Length: 227
Image (cartoon, rainbow, N blue to C red; front, side, top):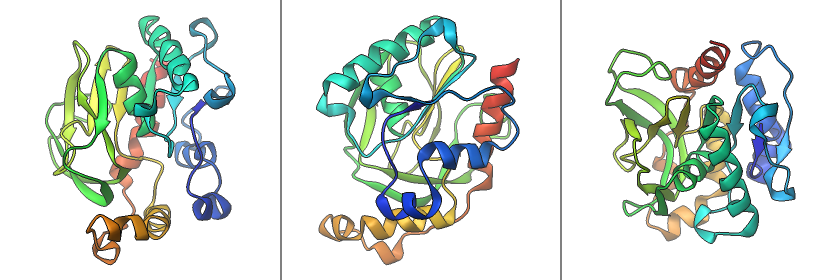
């Protein structure tokens, strides 16, 4: 697992790191060892050493082009080229998009926060075949505004046209957080309430719900990685 950041402090104190949240939802679906690498410390994945790769979310922005982000982009691009099963979550989704030739910018539709309706646009094994909407938990202000060559959009929301993307044969990105339940989502809304109000968003009006269908993405990815 490639760590790119930490949850907001209140959530991390109560529920743990992104690694802990992901492992909690993943359960026993991944039966192999889990190696944790921290991209911020220069710990990067090598294709020949991986069975699969999950890239976590982060409060950082891909748009800063910080040196560690550029190094991580080069590493994950090599992983995808080697056909290692890869899943990017939120920041990880954006990192993949930029690394493979797309563009990440501030979302022109504004910040997306809370439990939102996600609409499936195309059948794909990661999200299932039924083109029906489901709830997903979002917390982002950046977006993959231009997709890399060959990418296919799998799902959208009202504010995010690239909510789930298949970047390559064995590489996916989801702008939502499959590891967030209602408690975690509420913690994020509470932590961002001043920013939300400054942007004209009422934090009390935002939904914070469990999102079991979105959570299944992690187990599905683990099964796809084993195949």
